[in-house]
Length: 391
Image (cartoon, rainbow, N blue to C red; front, side, top):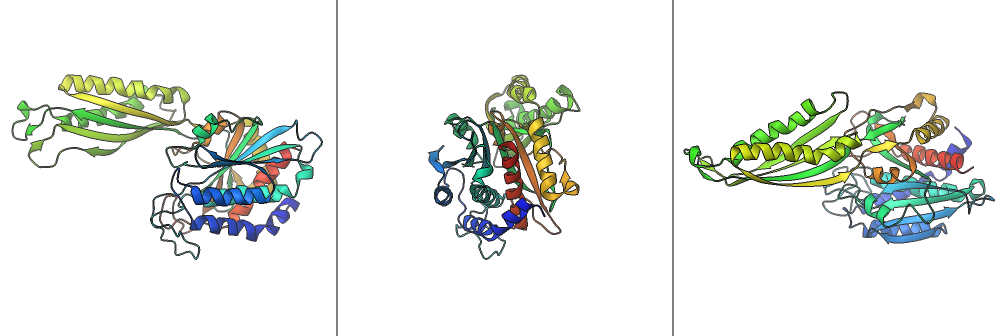
């Protein structure tokens, strides 16, 4: 065990207490009032320069090192997300959610505990820091997204953020493993709502109707050709329709059908082209069927892309923290993260911390939980990276 790991271990009970307190009070996107207040109080206890009410409930706490060049040195941002999910908890934990129908089922309580823990540990090591650290707590990661409005509110400036780090607890990796990867890690993600309008009538007389159900079926099939025939087979992409609603009876052709779906890709050029590609296909099919349509395409998160140099540095720090045998290059995922907005503004790296073990529940599950020792790994890794970047 490294000296830093030993220091982190001294704070273990406090870090676990942070997680338990936050797990009890989950709040959904842009409603993180109690969560924000808890985080603020912990940051103020450390004497940090705290700013609140950023993008509603976002918070930053700025720590200045005691090194001779700290005021003019680089700035590292360490980010955590704060929101819970609208899920009724079924873990049976003694510190289970006290908010009915809301739960920390994606590890955000752990993310906050790790960043607060890193602030606690690094506060005792300010003499080793030649620069500044901005501890950032973001609302609404689960949607509609709090990172972008925080960036727009200026959190990457005053002082300018040079480096950005974040981590996600990840059941797809074995417990004890740290996943560090250069380049694309998580996909860009958009949503769309499509309404196809035809002319309803009797199911026995389709020739007198313009059938939006049939039109929708043609559209769904054709949208899949965007991936299979318009894009490189070695560049992954997804178009998924997750909801289709229309009609209420066996023998009535409805007037309209609505569809909801999502697109995913790692390629920024593909990401910005999705709406135009979809519009052309939908327009052509509806015109040929005599139907009309409205497409509400909603750009959400860009791809999460790790800077090569930062990924290399974090990998080196991870090897020091957990050993070479426990550092892996994780598979990229079509899941998305609005950490991407911060990585567009600073050299950064997003990390996966393995929580996988026999019988563990997946993310966004009512029974999701994890071995809290992973929080100490995350704290030690954040601290190791901070000490390396700002030495």
